[in-house]
Amino acid sequence: MIPEPVFEAPWHAQVFALTVHLNEAGVFAWPDWAARLGATLKTHGLSKDLNGGDDYFAAWLETLEAYLAELGAASPDKVSEAHAAWKAAYLATPHGQPVTLD
Amino acid sequence: MPHDHSDHAHPHSLLPSDPALRVKALETILTQKGLIDPAALDEIIDTYENQIGPHNGAHVVARAWTDPDFKAALLADADAVVSEMGYYGRQGEHMVVVENTAQVHNMVVCTLCSCYPWPLLGIPPGWYKSDAYRARAVREPRKVLADFGVTLPEDTAVRVWDSTAEVRYLVLPMRPEGAEGLDEAGLMDLVSRDAMIGCALAGTP
Image (cartoon, rainbow over all chains, first blue to last red; front, side):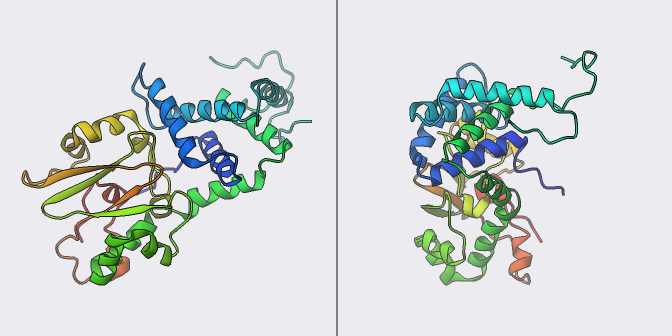
């Protein structure tokens, strides 16, 4: 039997690791995180039955963004800026070359 | 929507999905602020993709099947016992082991999000995180078990445990008949992840 992948998509693994790391770095406590994630899942789950993959991690990411904004660790403006910078970097980098921010 | 490359002289790198870019954006900001170390992220991912998984829990179960004193200690204070085996760490602050018997079958869910004993099972599978499982495990556990192919005797009660950020449960499945001649490694092969969540029975030799 081929074991199923632990994470369905690389970004699921990334956002998971980022959250665990922030918790360990003391940025927030895990029960506080879990309560917030639970609340987001509940809200998202009102309109449809969430799957445990993309839907679940979409709620996870939204929760993390909101929590970091609230804590002043990453403001929505800065996040949008960095998001746009990464997008531009991918579009400007020829295929096969590492994508980096200047 | 198909991506049109006709306006590019050279095809660019494949653009990651929107959420993937949002995660990268957070990483960039937090790294610049010195709040995270990117190398630590890779280490965390490697740990859960390659090192920690249900084989840890299976080891605990196999030992409990063969050593009554160990089993008694495990059921009394799982944290102390599994820590001694080296299975401690993130999301393992308070683990409780619940034993399946002919009278009671235990099942674990996290109705809030996806609390789970990481040191023993790794991180949870997609179905454990789905709304379908989180809602139905409590409401109609026997139907959920049937979906997993498990039919219990009618006089076996089903008890559902709700894991939280404070307490995380692991099911000690019943030892199957016919496994007497197996050593610890042989027994471990009979213990699946799903059996330790309570959604399967131990395999038969």
